[in-house]
Amino acid sequence: MRILVVEDEHKTADYLCKGLGESGYSVEVARDGFDAQHLINESEFDLVVLDVMLPGLDGWQLLQLIRRRSQVPVLFLTARDAVEDRVKGLELGADDYLVKPFSFVELLARVRTLLRRSPPREREHFRVADLEMDVLRRRVTRQGERIPLTNKEFALLELLLDREGEVLSRTYIASLVWQMNFDSDTNVVEVAIRRLRAKVDDPFTQKLIHTERGIGYVLEDRA
Image (tube, rainbow, N blue to C red; front, top):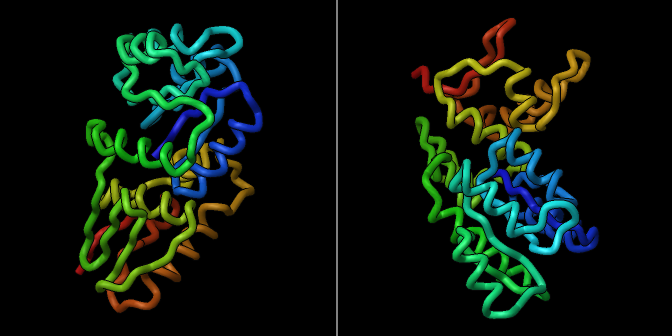
């Protein structure tokens, strides 16, 4: 799941990016309101963590722009702790309001709660044959055995499961999992697929990840 952090304090932004990334989320950071506006217009996010006092557009203005086009959950994270500010934020359409200084554990709990409440644009649970993924718990099992995955491996497997039965090109996979324009000289997708297979396919008789030569990869039950 993708989270946009809109924060002009570099130390706080880096802290959020690192913490949320280690919790399994794909995080992008905007340092001012205009950068955030551009990212929101160009990309889809599952949640926005939004400061109020920002260069360019402030958080109030940015939230109003967001609400004209999207119902993405928005969590205000700000030093403005007055009751009238909290009320204003919620009345403008924010889903939650957390005051700095904050506990990362509390912020993470609120993020998870908001993502559970949001429309199921992305599924929370997948099952193909004996392979299962619990997205919110970041848990993958096969034949009941837990399979530890890195964040990128998890994101790659989630994409393949979400598009079960569809052949996905290397370019498409690279753009969604790595947010990169695919470089034909880069074998990042092949390497990642090979590592993922070593964990979720090789130890088992039935193979679920298949190569379509010259096209890409597909995950499906062919038994």
